Image 1 (cartoon, helix red, strand yellow):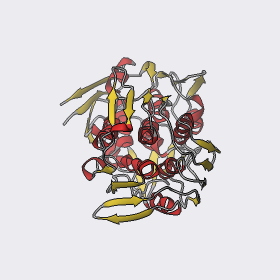
Image 2: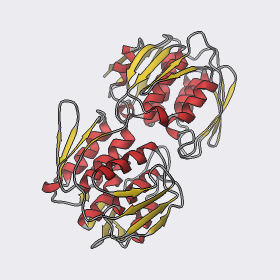
Image 3: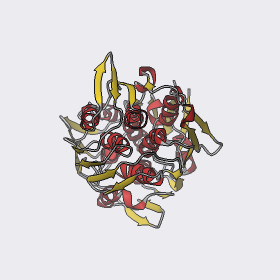
Image 4: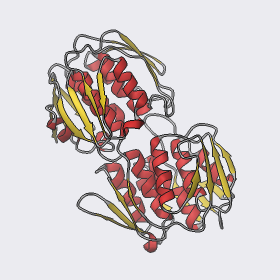
Length: 418
């Protein structure tokens, strides 16, 4: 099993090129199922989750080709199955995103239930209820969701909870449905907007993009297109946090400047100097005091749950006390005991963590429990005195492309070892 070894105490300084967004490319790859002609997706990050979804598509017979730049081309003319098996779906919950497109285009789908998730429950009942409202017959048997519909019908769907994957699945189902579909209380995340923009380029008719009400006028068919995925806002925030926690400077390049307002406001509150251009964001912490900040996660445009762990790492070495409240996932504080191994002073009360900043934390052997927890521990290692070893970095590789190379390029001492 691979690990990251980090020698802490070095202020990072330099530029980081941000990759395409993991949480945007996965639904867009699922959307290629809807295309009757070949399609190419660009700015695709080299990530384990991307490879997994490509395998799901290939398992259904879809032709998937990847070029030297990691652009992915798909051709659905070779599809011979509408089944996504447990062996693949269990490794990545986002595989559920093939459900809506399969039912919409082919009238049937058999997709394994994703199973448990380390950071909390992610029920698929919203996906199922939405498809049933559009006329699909859905059963759950032997661990599989089986859905059938001669053609989906437009419907008004009100989401009980804001769900990103639920919104994406039903949006992809609605674009080929007969009539008009209205999705109320839809997720507004930039990744949902990116999917909608891709579908529009494929020929879909969607209004209300970027709002909590999506109105979709179904069309007969969609064509493949050439689409470039938006930059990863969470990767952007993570590398900016590397500068904040080490007292350094990082300029992130190829970024979506408008997708991180809540995060940038908190960086400013923490004492960082933020500068922005058309496609870059710079955080400068040199000569400045890092201050503890209070965080409460909520759906976009509020503070994202995927940046909670990184800010908790910052709070461990900040001046003052920061209160971190997690409202999205009930089990997303598993990094707390690992940070405690490094000397962090954190009191956990349910889904609230009270973090008292310490003058120093110390390197230790720690274990990543999920994707963002792994980023948190890497950041803590950058700030810690001595050597930190982060185990189970397969979690890291799910969402960060070549993290050790990007950190090394800005001066960090990080190596990958077996």
